[in-house]
Image (cartoon, rainbow, N blue to C red; front, side, top):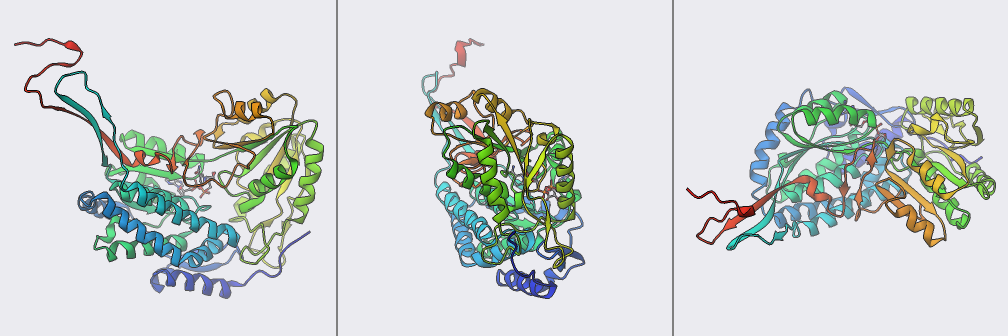
Length: 510
Ligand code: NAD
């Protein structure tokens, strides 16, 4: 079994985190607060932050900044986002270091997360000149009918630990060019990364002569998130995290008729058909299931494989799982870093036990590793579990690297199994049959927001709208026309006729 060499101690990680954060413009004092910040790499504190006591002042400042920001022409707002993209490019390795140290991502994935931020900045800069509305034909003579898009106001962004900065950038780059101001409440597990990213944006704003309160950061836990969700002056709450969190945030925002954009839990499957290229399938499955130590919303949690190939597929996956290098995510060659904390590790153990009680067999992995070197950290070898059918355990999202292997006989059954879970984020089919690929991506196919053919369930590009259905929350972020969620639409009818004809031929002569 492959594990990587030694896990760095507290002093080494503290120094690395401080250096990276300070290079991004974070004041040293901000890293020494009373709330400890732990690294999952060794399970030890790297420093601390202070939490914001309440949200009221931040919302008032944000609202005041909005009144100015909405008057700045969209391409000029885009120029700020362009500068942010340039700063992110210059600090790519600093931010990636913080992502690895706080979220446990391997270096390549951490760099990929920052690249995604740069990509979405590019997208938003282009968008700043393309916030188009439609012009419609009017049924009345001498009338013009059109729609205009206007900024919403203050946007609250609540983000999860596993994409500590990319999700903020998806929301913030778009919200800023749309003319909104942003208040970000990141995960309480990843505040250093948030401080660094926010410092870079603050620099971009100040360099362009705009108030820094256009983009603010507030630190705290779910209680502060609740305050943000409940505040009547927060026009849109974009919340990424567990379905449990979404169940609290959604109704809270709806009660005050605010808008919410929810990006919640996933439970993603790949269907592997008899015609699939198994080499491709194995590579796609392993990246999606074991990458990021199973801690992506798009992580593959179920493989639904045709009964004629499931044994061969199981053997091939088991061989790769034994070889996966588990260890310090910042060391070259490591493919699987740590779980975020002890509670994730116990959730994994509990799910493995329940799966076995429900007739499952652990084919590979599941073991705890490197405990001698880092007793406070939680390194787990990704687990493969063979199940005879979809037993209750597969319906829940366990945020850890467990992949359930399930057999199917008929392609229609495979689609039904894909769709049977309450979540609806990502899905994929591996097939060389055009009819299967088309059916899977059709209205009778997968019911998820992301439906792939011959690639895994994770690793989306920013150009598409990202999000999922059912308990995943229904929100869409990032590319395509996701920007519309950050704006309000006005329908304008302009009468230049000198007459007052009424629509639908209504006569109201007085
Ligand atoms: P979490 O739900 O524990 O926390 C997410 C964020 O919500 C944190 O900032 C937290 O402080 C805040 N929060 C918690 N309770 C709240 C409340 N009552 N009101 C307001 N805010 C509250 O999630 P996590 O453990 O950080 O992340 C893992 C989860 O996030 C998984 O379920 C994963 O699938 C999901 N996720 C979804 C997406 C997506 O795009 N669909 C992306 C990343 C992560």
